[in-house]
Amino acid sequence: MSIKAPLMTLRLCWLIAIIMGIALWTGHLFHLAPLHMAMGSIAVLALWVIAFQAKRRGVTGGLIWVAIVWGLVELVFGGAQVQILTGSMHWLTQVVHLLLGIGVIGLGEALAGRAKRLSVN
Image (cartoon, rainbow, N blue to C red; front, top):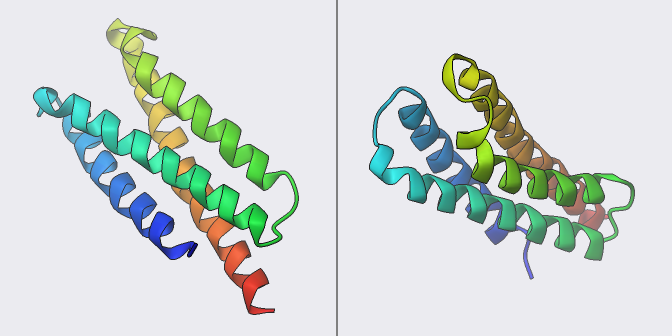
């Protein structure tokens, strides 16, 4: 299996989730929150596929486990964020969620890059 397809899926879903997240953050498109959550979930699943493929291609070290745990944390935190620090401090929850999401794309790109380098050698 190619690592390109899950990487492109991750990139597309992440981009859509970020755009929708910004819209939600600014008070727009609340009716599309389930789509935002679906895009984020698919992005995390793509990250996990990339991690699996990277492992199969010989990537070693803790980065694979970091990606697996990071994705799980993002899913749990994202699903529960409306209940965390409600009120005037909720923006802190949103920032943490955004940073976790940025981490998802960063981990996916890093793992895919390592896997590609290993398969060239």
